[in-house]
Every structure is written in structure tokens, then in C-alpha cells.
Length: 307
Image (tube, rainbow, N blue to C red; front, side, top):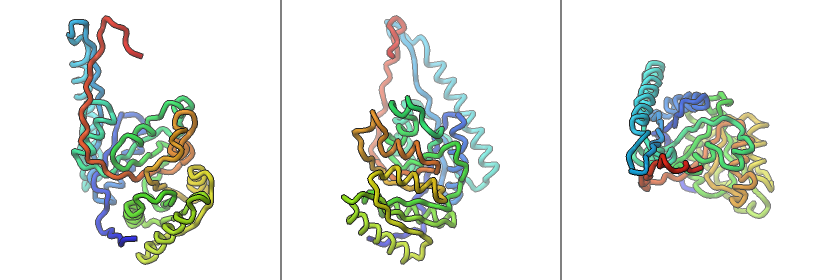
């Protein structure tokens, strides 16, 4: 494994999507503390859905004025939050963005244009049955955004990450993940719990990479614990480890398992989201492809509204 330099944090720009619901409050608190520790800039983002209604002649009946009012109201609320946070934390670098469009498309535009490293998403905790079947807000954000994603439940109140669970279950992007884990540990006086987790089928390869990671941490004199776990259910094992041991954050590679179960049963991501109480950080390679803006056709007032 290549040597890892960690003098500068890989987290330089953090986006926090805000819909002004209670679940966002904890995400903002967490993002602010992370920004201060990593000397990063934070972006408070609100996306306005540009809905409008037209008649058969194509004349806009409803939409333009309402959208403008929504943008003005969101701008005022975000600027008020920015001013409050700046007063509390004078060294905090913070910016507000109000954008129109579909939420994930608009956020991905911001990820590209502002070179976002991490999006911190507030979640409501456990999904309901209907959400589990049709897809939840947190799951949609996780699978759609083109940057690393942290899911922060409104029920989890730790904003410092002293106990870092580092599962080794897939072999992709391990160097990137380790660099980030070390950066978080060093800025939180934390300890990394390195856990090799896999089945008998992939255990030899996994063990080899696990031992290389151990050696790298040992050479850096990094505080860590380590264990190897043989299992047929990675998600269940990771959730169990995070809930039974001290754990503030779980760091995961963005790689789904059993994708075919996405609709009718819980896949890896949904099992992790539903059954883990700690913060979840999914490491994703940054995508610099420009997102084309969506086209909105509006509704014909004289026709049935879709859905």
C-alpha cells in the first residue's frame, strides 16, 4: 500500500442541504463542528422546486410569482442561519446557496461547480415500511449525489468522532478511505476500529488488505484496534458492531451488495441506514461531470394532473 500523507485534510468543502425541517438541525451542528476542525468551508443549500401550471394556450397560470416568493423566503432564512452561526463561530467560513431544480440535480450542480468534498444529510432515523419499499430521502440522496455523503440522524447527538468504525468489506478506494479516517481521528483525538468483515469466499483477499492497513496504521503510530469477523451478512455485522461498541461514526465504501433486492427487500445500504444509530459516512469518488439542467414542462390546467 502506498504511503499516506495527512497534513492537510481531504475535507475542504462541506454542503448541507436544508429543507428547514427538524432533521436538518443536527446535520448543521455536525457540519459546523467538522468545518471548524478541518478548516473547511460550509455551504448551506436550499433547493426550490420550480413548479408551475399552464393552460392549454401555454399561458402560465400559477408558478412564477410563487417560486420567486419561495426563493426570497429561503434566502432570508438561510442568511439568518448563516449570521447566527457566524456570530457563534467567528472563524467559520460559510456561504448560502438557493437554487431551483430537482433536488438531486441541483445539488450535483453545486457539487461540481463548488468542488464539494462532502454532503452532510439530516435523516429522520428509521424508515417506515412504505419508505423502505419505495425509497427514502436519505437513500435517494446517498445513491444520487456525486460526492461522499454523511447521513446524520436527528436522534444521534455526538458531533465529535472519537470512535471510528472502519469496516474492510470491499477493496475499492481503501487508500482514500484510510486517509480520511486518519484525518478525522487526528482532529477528534480519536481511535480507529479496523474491522475486516467478509465471507469465506472473499476472506483471503480481504485479510491481505486488512493486514496492509494494520501495518500502515502501526507505521504511522496511529491509535487503532483491529479484528477480523467471518460473516454471511456484512450489513448486519457492521450495524451490530456499531451498536454494541463505542462508535460515533461508521466509514463505508460506496459499494452496494445484493442490488437486486433494492425493491422487494433491504439491500446493504438500506439495512445499514435502518439498523445503525451512529453517523454513517459513505466514501464516494468525486464525479466532475457537469449535470445538465432538467426541463420543466408544467401542468396543463385543463388536463388531469399526473399522479
